[in-house]
Length: 87
Image (cartoon, rainbow, N blue to C red; front, side, top):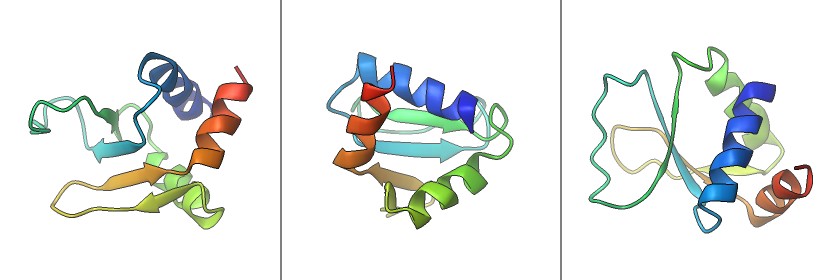
């Protein structure tokens, strides 16, 4: 989970107002975000990504807000603050 959290921290530093993230299989999958900046993570680059997200979900740090075919999760403010403090 360390590599995922490190990437997430870096992305939040670059995009501090983002709270939603998408999970897609790999970079070959096209994701239409309607021109909106989004955080996207690839299962091919983080083999245990879904297990990591489930752990975060169990602790209340992320919430599943999927409304279409692509898994989408919302980060809690507490989690974002904690990640950014650990930098």
